[in-house]
Length: 69
Image (tube, rainbow, N blue to C red):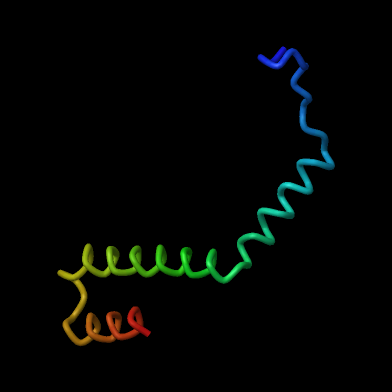
């Protein structure tokens, strides 16, 4: 029993599906998309930096230009 004296009710399949659907819809909001986009840009810069010794300078410039756009 929980501290309020009521038994914890296990989630039903319907509530799990509804939760999954709502999370999916929330990811479509512009603020969520911007956040994910920012995270991807940060990761792209990290990858480019980690591999700069094997990427030519001209290719690095192209990568940086595409990251900025």
